[in-house]
Amino acid sequence: MIAEWLQTIPPLAVYLTVLGVVGIESFGIPLPGEIVLVSATLMATRPELAVSAIWVAVCALIGAVVGDSIGFAVGRRYGIGLLEAAGRRFPKHFGPSHVALAERAFERWGVLTVIVGRFIAILRILAGPLAGALRMPYRKFMPANLVGGVLWTFGTTALVYALGIAAETWLKRFSWAGLVVAVLVGLTVGFLVKRRVIGLLTRPEEGAAAS
Image 1 (cartoon, rainbow, N blue to C red):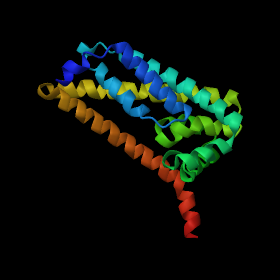
Image 2 (cartoon, helix red, strand yellow):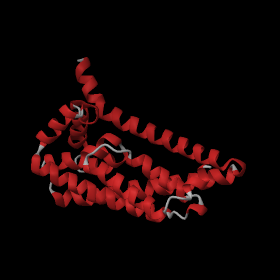
Image 3 (cartoon, rainbow, N blue to C red):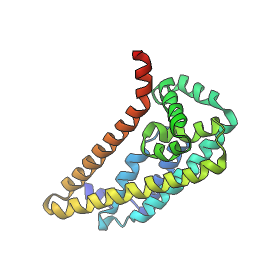
């Protein structure tokens, strides 16, 4: 039943969904960009769905780079006050702790935060607007934006696609179970990496509080 339903979705709709969701998330609006990217890539492992993993990655890259650039321009135009106002209205996504975490990342890593932030949900949403608000030169922001976008989109697509194909090869009788295994492995690795990075950022604050 699931396979039949998926076959009714045009590949173009998949590509546009990836581009739109990733782009809006990169602009600074919290949407599940990573989940959409992973889901579209898993669809690409099913030949009958006619979804291209390459086009999924390309659309995600366009959305990521353009969305981050728009977020940068908005942050540069309206400054940190916009993030503070958003934090009061949407504390779950733009609360003071989130903004403080992102600011600490820029203090520690500078422009590299734009690259690293691609792999962490909080920074992925805030990196563009905050870089603009902090007056980072666009000539430094754009290369990092492009590099981070390429690493995240094509890296995630390649990894998830390989896991999906491998899972179906190993578990031919349970192909959908194979996809579930691939998702769980990917999410687990991603969670551990994000937890490690966030731990590095919050450690100084904890040390200061203890003293």
